[in-house]
Amino acid sequence: MARIEDVAARAGVSVGTVSNVLNRPHAVAPKTRARVEAAITELGYLPNESARALVSGRSRTVGLVVPDVTNPFFADLARGAEEVADKHDVVVMLYNSADSIERELRYLGRLETQRVQGILVTPVDRGGRAVEDLISRGTPVVLLDRGQPSRNVCSVTVDHRAGGRLAGTHLTELGHRRIAFLGGPLSAPQVADRLDGARQAATAAGAVLETIETSALTVAAGREAAGALALRDAGERPSAVFCANDLLALGVLQTVTREGLRVPEDLAIVGYDDIEFAAAAAVPLTSVRQPREQLGRVAAELLFEEIHDAGRHGHRQVAFQPELVVRRS
Ligand code: RIB
Image (cartoon, rainbow, N blue to C red):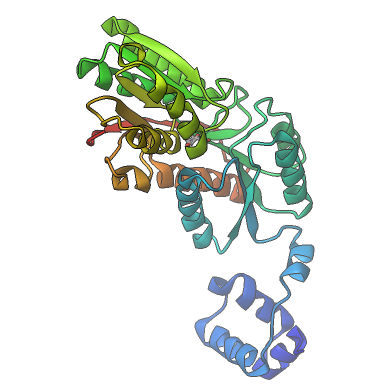
């Protein structure tokens, strides 16, 4: 196995120059860089990333911890974050906390011991103690999709009350006077905020909004809740349902159509996130769109700003506005 010293000798430069070509190529004259790269290829030299991380004290990675990797919402977030990380020659390590506080804490601890440069996290643990501890021990963190009252951390979120109002107003303007909100757990801030916004809109229009709490924000939870809805007599059933995310809405759509209900004639459906499958659904879903990749990009930009210049970095809470995308459901 060729060593860095062999590359230096072959290219006629110092070991430090070879290290610069590997870690700060822009700092090396093009001709010198070309000679070193030729020597690396000829010798088949393989840099030791772990050794480099030991020397520099930080690995060339950032962590991204999300509650549900099966939800396309987070895949889109990750794509945006990775686009920015790649520009910094950093890789993103994706962890699925599966909505478990215990798992989230374990993964945050592992990322810290691996000396990642920073962490993006959609926290399940709303108490935020683990995040505060990470920051106090020197690992930059940015919160994604869920804010935190304290001001010593950046966050990138969407105004979910506004999103709930968009959905509720859309349905009341269509004439719906009996609406169901489907989502949960209601302890999740982004679910509670969407419900709150929808309730504001329903109240303003004199409509009735019933809440059907689900155990999760998944297709399966949507199917289960819709099964109960479909069994109700027409006079007891809401004429519209606002789902806290598109996965729930897709589960509702699948079940109620299987039970013979027409969408939107018998039951109008609105989702949230506007993931790619919303438009592709059998009845294209009306959905409240979140700028998913942009959320990931901005969060990563804030993280690298803090990583590269903590002294000048000022923590900020960035909140985007959602938009209603009207389709057939
Ligand atoms: O955590 C699941 C949901 O929360 C996603 O669907 C998205 O709406 C996020 O805000």
